[in-house]
Amino acid sequence: MIEIVNIEKTAYDKFVGQFEGFVKKMTEMGNRGTNKCLSDWLDNDDVCKILKISKRTLQTLRDNGTLAYSQISHKTYYKQEDVDKVIKDVRDRQKGAAWRKPRKKSETKDKKSV
Image (cartoon, rainbow, N blue to C red; front, side):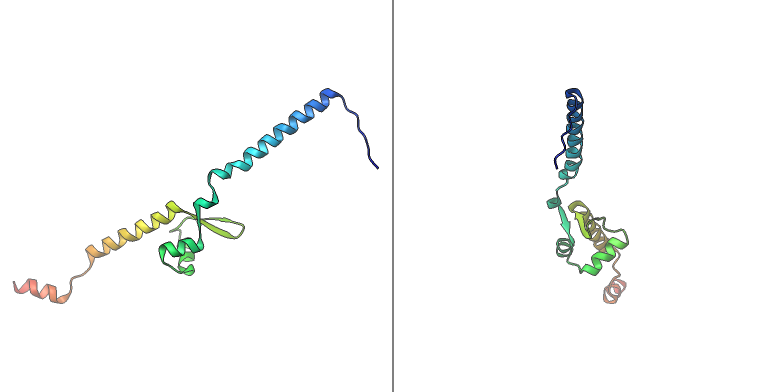
């Protein structure tokens, strides 16, 4: 059974205007995230390949706060710039370790005898 409802034109126009405003707001909300396309984000496999690490090591980087991430429906994503920061930090540590590297005993003996 179909039910027909009659309303005044002004009430109808008001309802349509409010509905169009609602649709506009919902569209804007839906488009907020499109500036950050998921194609710009990396998943676990991508990051493991880039950093040449295992998934367990990647989990440790997340757990200890070294690598920022976002999770959507049980899938983890990373920003490229956050991964680049980890790469830079590792390189900096390697450079620092090279400066602090202790000399071999043979090098210290040679310098003492001179």
